Length: 235
Image 1 (cartoon, rainbow, N blue to C red):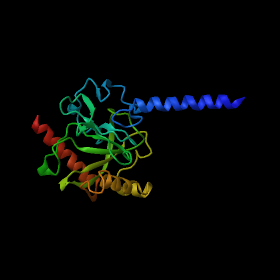
Image 2 (tube, rainbow, N blue to C red):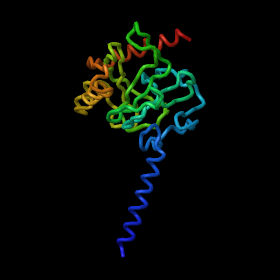
Image 3 (cartoon, rainbow, N blue to C red):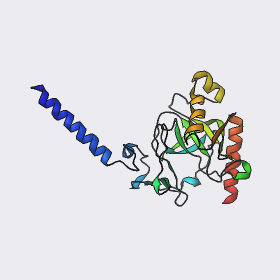
Image 4 (cartoon, one colour):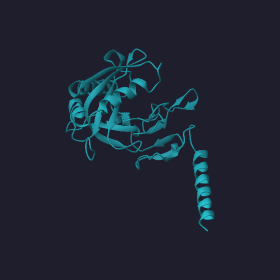
């Protein structure tokens, strides 16, 4: 008597799985399941919009922590970013006419941008807001969080400097007390190696990414302050 029930359950699960895959976006299954901040609303399948200008937020808080805008939650692969045309929006980046998906393992931390920053090429940047990877549990897309900068991963992308700030969520995370890369390595062995390996390889074997190793929090914060100063001077 139980076999028909089991078969019916299996059929329902199969239909549910098919429905989920049928509704996937950007040719990425389950893409519609990633949570986004309650402070924003879905404009369409590829854009979330809030009420505040994200780039007008201060990069640094009075207590020395920094602000970060989460664009890509930990473990996901869809390449979202703060819109250059509408700084109230975060959108799914297009490349070659299609939504961009990282063809590798999902991001090893929450990836995002530091608001109110822009580092020109002559200072080692690319003119965009500073990139940051936040070590913590997954954070909803578009969320603005306080982070502690603990270092910077020096990277070359196609021969051009493309550094990644390394940060931890300032509160309520297993990493919140970490203040340096050396402390991270001591208390969480292998995490910095994972980050280094991921960024060196996520664009593929011929992707042009080259790691130059980590520098300490002092160097990272100096870069952040220079980028904040440059952005303020541009306004």
